[in-house]
Structures are given as C-alpha cells and as structure tokens.
Amino acid sequence: MLILMRADAGAADLERVLDLLRESGIKPQVTRTEDATCILGPDASKALNAEQISALAGVRKVVRISSPFKLASLDGAMGRTVVEVNGVRIGGGDLAIVAGPCGVESRDQLFTVARYVADSGVKLLRAGAFKPRTSPYAFQGLGLEGLRLLEQVRAEYSLGIVTEALDVETFDAVEAAADMVQIGARNMQNFALLRRAGRCGKPVLLKRGPSATLEEWLYAAEYILAEGNRRVVLCERGIRTWSDHARNTLDLSVVPAAKALTHLPVMVDPSHGTGRRDLVVPCARAAVAVGADGVLVETHCNPEKALSDGPQALLPSDFAQMVGQLEGIHRVLREAKGALSGLALNGL
Ligand code: PEP
Ligand code: MN
Image (tube, rainbow, N blue to C red):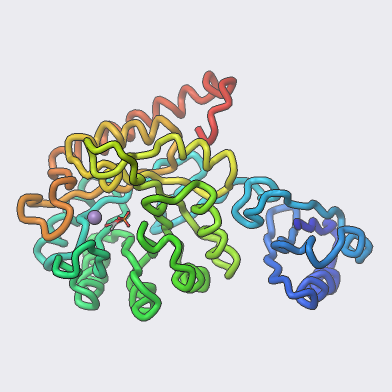
C-alpha cells in the first residue's frame, strides 16, 4: 500500500499513520520527495483497508500496490531509483562501469589493476576478498587481509570499492570496508544474508542466481528492501541453460523485462555471463544498447596467472578500449533518446 500525505500534513499526522501501520504488524517506510511525503506499507492491505487510512488527518490518497513486489515494484514507486556510489550514479540515465579482478590476490596485483582502472576514468573497483568457489580446494580469497588491501587501494586511487559478502559471520567486516556490498549469484536466495544486507548502511549489488527467474530475483531484492535498505542494484550475470558454448547464458532480455517491473537500476556482468574473454566486450556493448544502467567486468594485469576466473578477465589494453566503446555507445543512445522514445524502450 502506498499512502500519499497532503502537503500541509504535520509530523503528528505522519506519526498517527505510521503508528496505525506498526500496530498492524507492518514495517512502514517513509519517502520524501521535493513536494510529497509518502509511506510505503508493504502488504498493508492484508491487515488494513484503504478507508481506515484515508480517514486519518493529513492523508491525501491511498493506492493499493497490486504487484507482489511491494517495495521493488515500479508501480507505487516515486520514480526510478538512482543509487550513488563514490560519486557514480547507478540509474537515472547514466552509465556506471565497475571493473577489477575477480579476487584480491596480492597487494601488487590489486594496485596494478587499480591503477589502470583509475587511469581509464572508471571510479568503481571490484574485487572479492571472500570468494565463493565451486571447489573447496580452489583459491578462497584473502579474507580479512584482502579487505585491508581494498581499504588501502581505495585511499590510494580514490576508487569506490565493490566487494562480496559471502556470509552473515563476515558481513560486518565487509560492510566496513566496502562502498557497495555484492551479494553473489550463489547467495541470491540466502535469506538470512539478504536480511543482513537489508540492515546494512551501504548500497547492495544483488546478482541474479544462476537459475533464478526474474520473479525470484525481484523477491530476493524485496527481502533487502523490506529491512529498510533502499539502495539496491540488480545485476544480471548469466544463467544456466543447455547452451554450452559459454560458461553461462547472458540473459540480456531480462534487462528491459526487469525495468518494466521494478524501479531498481539493473546492471549487467558479461564476464561471469559468458566466461570467455572474447565474448565479454561484445556483450558489454550489447548490455549498454539494451538499456542497462551499468556494466560490471573483470580485468586482470596478468590473466594467465589469475587465481580465479582468468579466462574471462580482460587484458588491460582491451579493457581501456572497451571503456571508450561503451561510453561512445551510451552517448549515441542518449543523443538518440528523443528519436527512440516512440519505441517505448524501457530504461533507455
Ligand atoms: C564475482 O563477481 O566474482 C562472482 C563470484 O560473481 P557471481 O556471484 O555472479 O558468480
Ligand atoms: Mn569472478
């Protein structure tokens, strides 16, 4: 349920509405825009009817949200969400690029990659300190030591840090070190972790599960939103299909499909989405063209020696070239926006 307050409603009016919702077991969320205050009461219509709320002083309008994603849904939202990380706007028509190695391997490796990422003009660095690996014998990440290195590299190059939280136990440490916390594909339905992410003070990048439907992905986002964290960005990273020419099948059609349902920004990760260096750049270009709010890519100074995901890591020179191409495509699309608007392209 979405409750819009009148412009002249006072603090006491707002409190009365919030109290009524809380008494009914609902966790209300207040959003203030320039000219309106609105209250989102997820699932409130189960416990209360619109007339009860409309009768309260200061209430202008009550809207039922029919979507099952009460907080993630586009209907009922006060416009599309823009998530800002280190001065980079994810959403709102901008193009965000997040880049870096799969994992933090050493000070030397991290600083080398960070230097060329920063030189390319990209302001968000990705690298996992805690790595979710298929094999328990594979490199698991440097853990807390990796987080310390990420803090140092942020200070050195003024880069925002995007890094994964693997479990609830290590979440506090990751939250403290990160500018944006990544929830990995394998954890998309780890509900305890999603709830913890919802209580965290940093924006969250929510990867799509390897076999998740769009609906399941949006419900996962809903878990985070329901705890009060509104800064959620979705990231498509490929799903498991029977197509075997690539590691995963990058589902670019999910970008406009998601944008038709949710106000949350949607990014694309063509690195895990394909697992093949030669496919990453073409798919990154396609992601921008399809209306993604940003791209997350892996790059390594020496992919041959990478401790994880070397085959999909872009070489430094390819990476720099890709950044130029993506910015060029984004610029062209922006300029063509007027001409394209008649085609109802979601999110462009
Ligand atoms: C990663 O970003 O390094 C990663 C492990 O991604 P995913 O969860 O999408 O596999
Ligand atoms: Mn990886």
